[in-house]
Structure formats: structure tokens, C-alpha cells
Length: 410
Ligand code: ADP
Ligand code: ASP
Ligand code: MG
Image (cartoon, rainbow, N blue to C red; front, side, top):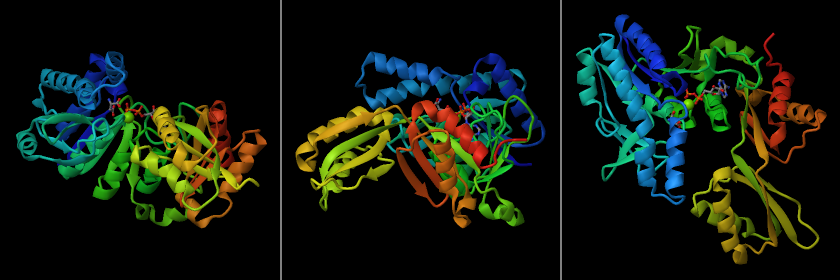
């Protein structure tokens, strides 16, 4: 007998028919003799709808009440799945975030899980009950409902698996695994049998939304065995594993494992910043204080005037806030003007093979250059190269790079 956590995403839970399909899969695992906890997302589109209500109610809403509203989508699906499981003759009950509870920080709308109390749920599962847990939600000190950031049900599932010391955490979604790139953009993307935690972490953090970044971070830290697979067919999925599990095959590991894109950034150029020690600090300090995560940074060469231009990217949703902060700090920084552009996309290639091979970035620059795609900024890590380009070239760039690194399926 194994203890497993099964997580079902929004498309898998969209409507009663699909919830019946989910219940059939859960039943199969229970009948195979496993103890099962299920983590569910809200129905596809529901969280967006609830976010819309909050914005309509007031653009500057209380984040604590926002969490109360958006956590509701998962409450509905967890109750519905428990009802359907019971109707199929399986004992089941829902456990809302506050009932377990799932303790989180108080960073509303992007809270971190601090710990999960599992005594009650373990006792219930030991009696043969299926535990159904709404993803995405938790409870902060002071008894306030929190949510974990968009896509957060993946993180709930991995955290539940870690807390229950589950043998496996199966993430069921609308594609049958992790691919070399988003299969919706590149039909010739190939499914990966296995991907390392480290590569999955980089891929997720640069835009492959198949798993939320924090879920991969947590799986890596807690050594949770994660598998990504489809709720709509029985094809084998993708295992997320330790690099040493690749063993001998590591030698043959592809140079590049995947290509990802992200359209959620915006570019700011600060024109004519004095080229002196401390100037960059006076620019990024106030942004950090305002909780803006600056991503790519390019500092241009100094003009004859002793000034320099600094270009960087911020999350698109933080653009108004960033401009406000920079305007206020203008006296301290001493720049002449700000130029913004939210018509940008970040394209990244990721692979552990990069550690031992030179020329990876060059292949990228050449491939994009040959298609007339201009590169506006570059960042690299040990296993990743990212470039910023005009948004309209996103799909073309992803396809061109997928081919250039030999990733296309035959
Ligand atoms: P869920 O609602 O099940 O959590 P998501 O929409 O969050 O599903 O994530 C699945 C989607 O991730 C897929 O439909 C696919 O378009 C997208 N995706 C992006 N990059 C990849 C990739 N490399 N491999 C597989 N899917 C990817
Ligand atoms: N329902 C939430 C969202 O849409 C969480 C999730 O599905 O993972 O972001
Ligand atoms: Mg998701």
C-alpha cells in the first residue's frame, strides 16, 4: 500500500462531468489499496472571475478580503468532489485550509506555507476516508484566510505530500507531462520522461506554468516524488527527479532541456543617471523597499556627459507602482526621464548540459538574429540564458530556438 497525493488542476475540475472523471481516477487508486489525499483547484476561469469581482468592487481592495473571495473557488470544487466520491460509494470528506489548518505567512495573495497539521486527516485516511483538500488556500495568524499566489494549488499538493510523507505526488493537468516547451505553441514539442528538480525550477521560474515555481522549490527541498500527468488520458507522465537519478544517461543529457516564455514583464529605461558610485543603489533601493522584483538589468556605457542609461524589467502588474516610486526618488537618483515599454517578452533556454558546454548563448543569439529578432536585454545563470525581445515575436522565437537546439520531435 502506498500513500499518494493526487492534484487536479482547473481544466480537470471544470464541471460535474469532469469531476466525475476525476473521482473515477481517485477510485482506481483507492481500489488498488492506496491511501489517497486529493488536492483540487477551482474550476478553470473561476479564480479569474473572482479576481474580477474584487477589482470591480474597488481597485484598491483590502488584500485580506481579496483572499476570502478568491479562495472560494476551491471550496466549491472540494465539496463537489467529496459529494461525487460519496455517490460512487467511497467514503470522503473535504478539509478546508482553515480546518486542517494549513498555516501560512500573512503575505496575503502570495502567502507561504509554514506548516500543515495532519493529525486529524491522518486519522481519517487511516479509516479509509479519501481526504479532499482545496488547493491555493491557507490560514494566517489572527485566523485570516490566505491564498498562495496564482497557480498555488501545485504548492498545496506538494506541501500536503511532504507533511503526510506521501510516496508520490501526482499532478494531473490538461497536458500529459512536461514538454520541451509549451505544446500549445510548438506542436512538435517533445514530452520529457524525466526532468531534474533544478531544471524544472528554472523552467517554472521563467514561465513554464505547468508547475508553480514554489511547488518545485518545495519538492526539491523535501524530496517529494512529483509526477506530472494528464487527467484525460493514461499516457505515462513526466517524473521530476534528482540529477543523480539520471545516472549514466546524464552523459547523453540534452544540452538544452527546454524553452520557456514569459509575457508578464515590462521594461523601464532610466535615462541619464549620473555615472558615479551609489547611483544604481539609489535607483534599485526604493524599488526593493516597495517590494518590486527587478529581473533583468542592463547598464549602458557612459555618455560623454558622465551620465549613463539603466534598463531593467519589472513584473508588468508592478509597472505603475515602479514608476510612482521612481518619480518620487527622482531628486535622489538625478535622472532626466523614464521610458517604459510593456510590449516585451522574455524567452529562456534551460539545461544542465550548459554547465559543461560553451557556445549555448551564441546559438541563441545567432538563431534569433537570423530571423531579424532584436535582443534588448540578456541574463544568464549556470543553467539558463534569457533574452528580452518584442512581444510580437514570442511564438516565432520559441519555435526558432526549439529547432536550433534540436528539440523538435521527429
Ligand atoms: P492546471 O490548471 O492543471 O494547473 P496550468 O494551466 O496551470 O494547468 O498548466 C498547464 C499548462 O501549462 C498547459 O496547458 C501548457 O499550455 C502550459 N505549459 C507551459 N509550458 C509547458 C511545458 N514546458 N510543458 C507542458 N506544459 C506547459
Ligand atoms: N485556482 C488558482 C488559480 O487559478 C490556483 C490554482 O489553480 O493552482 O491560480
Ligand atoms: Mg496550474
